[in-house]
Length: 234
Ligand SMILES: *Cc1c(COP(=O)(O)O)cnc(C)c1O
Figure 1 (cartoon, protein in one colour):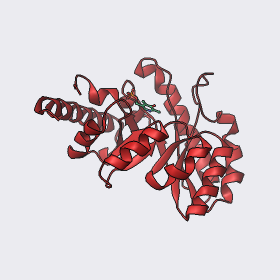
Figure 2 (figure 1 turned 45 degrees about the vertical axis):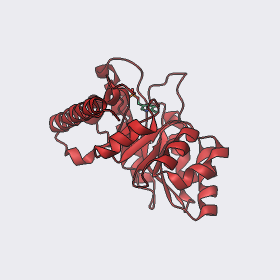
Figure 3 (figure 1 turned 30 degrees about the horizontal axis):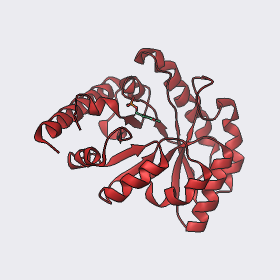
Figure 4 (figure 1 turned 180 degrees about the vertical axis):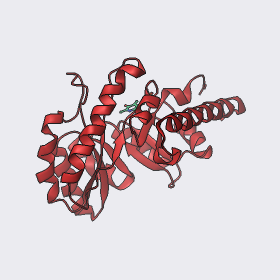
């Protein structure tokens, strides 16, 4: 990677970290409560590798095939997060290479992941994707259907439900606050009803244009792409 490229990438990352520190401070939270997942879907493996060299160890992709490709080319130490739709025929190849799946959007998918994880004798943490904003175009559970997951999940031995994920509407950040607060309230409501080994603690919410508000509302994972790559030339 040319020096100018890695210099700009580092500046962007430092700035994002400063903004995360500030948002945590405003919310009275520790910076260590929030994991930055760098979303590399729009950049090359080399650029993703540049981030790893700068100390980012959590990377996210929204397409399974692209995730498989990058996992093969990047250091094994990277923790990969699938943040986009997972088709059932891609579970088998995805499970062994991901740390977490943020985007489980149906009970059918959850059950299929359990079945495959049992076959592979593999434990996997997942987040349930919630359509908290109620937009017709969005994937995810309708909040009113979330309680149905509890009896289904009770029997699972390989899949642990560990959090909720949402995508806010594309609006200015402040307008996203009610969506993030809603996800937090849903987590607080459901958490006591899900028994171990499930542990509904995490909130995966906040993207480039709204992550500070998401942190103020309790995000434990933010998924950032464009803000990291602004002005960085491949
Ligand atoms: C692309 C993507 C992101 C990152 O979006 P930016 O606005 O580029 O930060 C986060 N979450 C999901 C699910 C995505 O697909």
